[in-house]
Each structure stands twice: as structure tokens, then as C-alpha cells.
Image 1 (cartoon, rainbow, N blue to C red):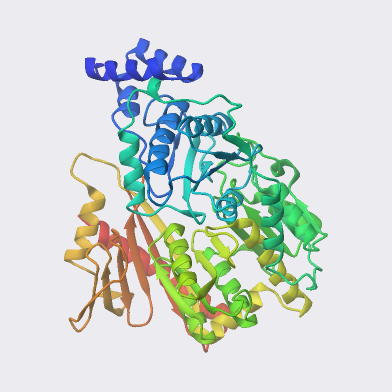
Image 2: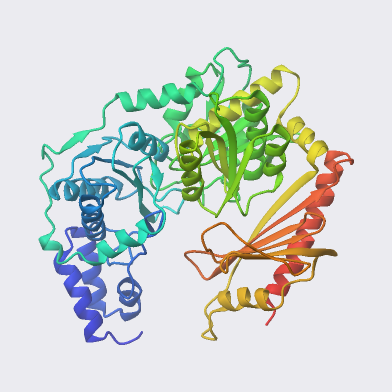
Length: 576
């Protein structure tokens, strides 16, 4: 164990003196008594970074953990930005929370610090799904919103997500402005914490949830077919009651939730990792689906902002749809029916690492198409811009199971997406078809698009920044082909340029991001970017099977191709 330096001890003791929570004070005192320099350095050498999604991290004492002292400090900085910002001054703030460990205390601390700074606060009194908070911010015309949630992180984590006016996530430079304001907060003893009964603190009006339900239900035809058996899981999160209630109100009488996963439980006892994408997370709902002879499986992640879908595979099993497949079938349905545009020009949107199929679907229907950087904050920003220009984004999605259907919530919303998927599946079933048949239609029209994602953790070996080295290697020696097809475009989103095979160079009309994209002549694509939180590279591949082949054959061949291409590409990127 390293020796505890006087400076590190002094910083820890200063934090200890300010910490309002007896539990984390005791935890920190034990570390000081043990002289655990390594653990203390991990907690005090950095502060949890405040980014465009706010904060997320492990629970515990110190600035590099989620705790009440950090929440008070962060909220004091946010309050200063809200009070003095030209775009936020004078407005109310909405606060909601999930049911994780610490969420209730963190929400109360945030509420009382804001009220102490003279800000009016509307608080959801019980745990709520994240999309409901985003909706409330926009519906009430609030200046900002805070959701205490770690989304789909492990049980030991918590987080703090921020919305600004309009109910969309913050984007640069506002995140940096808030971070600077947090750093400028002085002694925590000087931060005013209002009494719990301060008149500035009021509950969120009940009509907010009523309005949300009405608008979500308005996304579907109430007279549509409803003969569908659905197995559903909330994965121990906070979306279960609202999601199943909305499905029932829409006429879906045969919704079967997984009983042991339906109510919030911060320990997530039946899953190793509480996200639908993780192996084993869907086992309980698949077992229930077999028991009730379900036609469709739906799942939300713990804070309710993402949607997972599984369909029968024809052999007695179940197949999980990818985020790209969910987004594209919903877009095809909305555009084919001319729904949700309300007379405005319809648009669809996705991110640079999602499937290129959405662009083809939009072109087929004469709709607008926009592509953004990764993250729903950028998709929501485009939805707002297009609305200001007289258009309407009828669907946005990202490949990580995030969907915004219609214009109810300007962030991903797994609850409205669940209803939209159920409505589409019921209409298809009424016509003797399924979601797989609609995917086959798209494969015959546009080719079988298959996407695949991988990530590699590059441990710090002390030999330099391996992530940066790998990205620079790709810039210096880009691959000449992808699976034998010539690379025709190299997109360097950090430099803001795309270089074509003939040497022509175009500018990329997107904010800079450390992301590389390689496009081959046959439509095969590979994208690579660093993780924002770990020394990890994330790879995204796409291959397109021939439109004139049987869709199953075309998908199988495209899957084999994208797997081989990604393997070869990663070998090239990681070679030293």
C-alpha cells in the first residue's frame, strides 16, 4: 500500500468535515484510520466529471463518488448557472428520481439547495421514469430538470441527469459552463440549504402524468387491433406500473409482467447487470413468454428510457431485435402511414453509428433525414431545430435501444416506444404477419442491413495512451479495403473532414468528436470511437446483404461479413 501523503490526508479530512451524511463520513474515516492511500487517491484525485448527461458513478465518500456532499456541491453550481444564465434565469426546476440506493436523499438535497438559492422547485414525490421528468420540463415550461438516476448501471452506482428548457439534455458549451460553476463553489458550509417545508418547494401537479399519458396514448389509433399477448419486464426499475397501465389503457388486455421484476428494487436481485442487452437479463421474461404463449416481449431498462423487443424465432425460441431493427421498423410504419407529422414535413433522425438503412427508408417515403453525433442530446437538438423550421421529427433513434416516437418527449422514451411497438405488432398480427415479415420487406427493398458492435478495454500499461495510439494509427494508415471492398470514404469527425478515394475532401457539418468512419464501395461500414468513461475503444460495423436474395440468406451472409470485417479491422487498429 502506498504511503498516505499529507496533502491527500488534508483533502480527505476537509471533505470529511463538510460531509452531511453520517454513513459516508464513517466510511471515509475508516479509510483515513487505515491509511488506505490507494483508495483515497482514487476518490480524491479527481471529481466525477459533469458532462452532457450530468454525473454517474459509484456510491461512496469523496468527490469521485456519488454522495450527498457532491450532490449539494453540484446543485449549488447548477443553481448559480440557472440564476445567472440568460436562458434560464427566473424559471422553475423539476426534480424526479428513480428508486436506487441514495436517490431519495440526493433528490431532497438537490431540492433544498435549489430552494436555498432562491429557485422554485417542483418535485415528483415518488420514484418516476426518466421520460416523465423530461416531459414535465417541457410541459410546464420549466427552466431545467434534474433526474437522480444511474439509468442501467450496476446497483452500486447512482447518477444525476440534467435537462434544460424544452426537456432536452444539455449540449456544449452549457455542460462546461455548469462544470465551471461547480468548481467555483466555495465551502459547503456556505451553501444555503432550505428547510424541507420551504414554500419554494412544491409537488409536481398531478395533471403532468395525466397529460403525458394522454399524449402517449394519442400516438396510436385507439380503434386498432389489440389481439396480442405481451410478456413484459421492468427489470426491477421504475417504469413497470406506468408502462403496463398505458398499455392497458390503449386496449392491450393481455400484458403479463414478470412479477419478481415488476416493482422497483435497488438491489436488482434477479439480474447480474440491469440492462436488457446483457446476457441473462431477459431470461425471466423469456421464460414467462413461453409460459403464457406470448406473441411479443417488451422490456424497459431501470429508468424507463430504453426499449428492448424480442419476437418468436419460428423454432420455439425468441430473437432479440437490435436497436437498429426497432428504430427502422417503427420509422417505416410511421412514414408509410403518414402519422404524427400533423401536416408538417416529416423527418427521421439517427446517429452516425446507427444503421444506414434509416436514410434509405426516409428517401423511399420522401421524408427528411438527419444524422447526428452519438447521444440523444444531439438528436433532441435536431428535433428542436427542425420544429423551429416548420418540420417535425416523427421518430429519432439510436442503436443502443433508445427511441423517441413522435414529439411527446425530446429524449429517448422506452414507455411510448413500448406502446408503439405493441400497436405495430398487433396490426401486423391482424394482417397475419409479424415484425419479422416487415423486416423482410425492408431487406427486399433496401438490402439486408446487419449491424454489430464490439468494444475492447485497453488497460493502462504505462506505455502511453493506447486508445489515442490506436485512433492515430487509423488516421496514419487507414485500411484500404473492408472485406475486399475498396474503402471509398474516410470520415475523421475530430478533424471535421471526409476524404474520398479520388482525393477530394469535404467538410463534415457536425461538431467535432473523436470518431472515425470508414465506408467501402459495397456499403460496408466500420466506425470506431473511444468510450467517454473508460480506456476502451468501441467498434460499430455494418454490412448489407443483397436485396434480390432470400432475406434470411442475405442476413446470414451479411452477418458473416460484418463479423469478419470487424475482426480484421480491430486487428489492424490494435496492431502495435
